Image 1 (tube, rainbow, N blue to C red):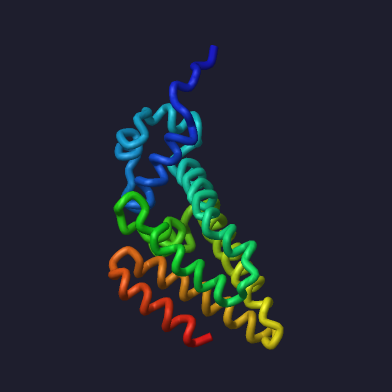
Image 2 (cartoon, rainbow, N blue to C red):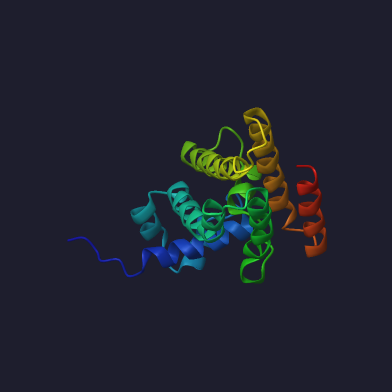
Length: 187
């Protein structure tokens, strides 16, 4: 007879997500996960397969939480202004629960290399494609731009967002606001 889970999976994934977000994927040990999640390794392996599986579940939860601000951009009809609002909305999101954590996906992309687990690399790529597509959609709202300019600006904004996500871990709010203003002055 299979044992009944004595925990709520989404709650333990959220705890793991917070730990990965604060400490990073590589630094986070199974022992740290056990302590943070309040469950043992057997339960982690039983539910998620391994640390990679748990991390992918944490990344998916992170993307759902980030959906609060990405959905605003998705449904925006403000073009570049909508994208700029997304950048500004990201700052308080990145300072979740009093910690300057940046972006879980960007932090992970900065930490791993191309030899990392394929599931993790796929999640990073899906996220980048999704954000770039949102930027493209909003840039296309400006009728006076040709396709090549829009593509180039979407790339520029994606890389700028990665910069903001990284900088949000260490820079002051004034510095982050200056960064955003300078980014959008270049469009």
